[in-house]
Length: 332
Image (tube, rainbow, N blue to C red; front, side, top):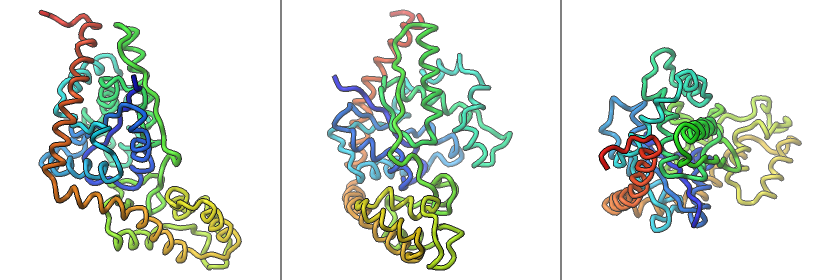
């Protein structure tokens, strides 16, 4: 039997290049090697969008279309919807009974997002418990591998700790997953921030038009020490060059760009212009695939419905094993 992958996205809008580099590239690459489940985590999306739940229906489709456009094959990988599998919420509740608040507050991913969103002391219970919810997502599918962005690795470690404790307290029925980070662990934002983030407005979406991509690239942060073309640059610290490494197919030419920048033979304007062309070349096939699905939203819905139905056979089985391990499978 194939080992299993669980990965996914919160439907809080369209996906961007950071998502592709961090997770989507690996999920597409591995879909034929593993039994793969891609979870659209709509319940978790409410942690920051509880005041606008009406957006979820549209965002579900956006996430699905982005994944399909990137090459996810619904005949091979299973795309499913979190809220339609109540067993996940049940497992989340069980995990929350033996997970301390202090461990959640210490989690680097949660700490970073609290600071980024300016929550301070106004932290919602559901947001603080996000690592527990994600642990339930992963373990209810008995996933062996979880493709994630570098910033999500603390969540994977928290999941491993929860699994170890559950198996020690009750019975060894859950699998300790491994995290898999993309070849470039994190894609910096267009403004030079450490992370590409929708909330910071420093993203290039997978569905952006050619013009939008060119405009965003033209405004990108570059090496602040390279003011004139003849100034020697520092490409390893320049977001534009980091994007080249992620998306330029010709690695030899990318290396030449670095040499020219280091020697002062290449300017930032030229780099940005070429990067816009590189990104649009990468995104054009995705745009074409996406347009086909945009014209057939009923097909997207069918993929989500059938995928969720298939996935639920697994969540039902796992929750039965969990109840039995905890000796709470009453009235059988």
